[in-house]
Image (cartoon, rainbow, N blue to C red; front, side, top):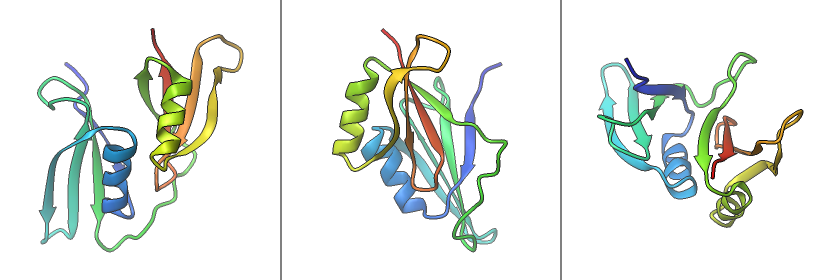
Length: 127
């Protein structure tokens, strides 16, 4: 078994696709409209779905926004240099909500960015 994807609901699909592709450097792998169900699914990631876990962005056409609730945590991405990743994300117009630094009660270097819907993306520095 392996993880295939994680699904998140988004209010503005074009903004979300732009964030994940232009700000975080993922690729739009596929996008499918379902007119009878009034929704669109877009899959983004860093590699082919056959071998990599990806994100499924679900846009329900009649729902402009969602409340995130308190059960959802974040998506985590490995980066070689968290501070450099934050700088690049800011330069591309992304929102850094926690600058790179050691995690609380630990030494792992982490940072957090936020997507257009308020979902948190953790950057974990890996050598």
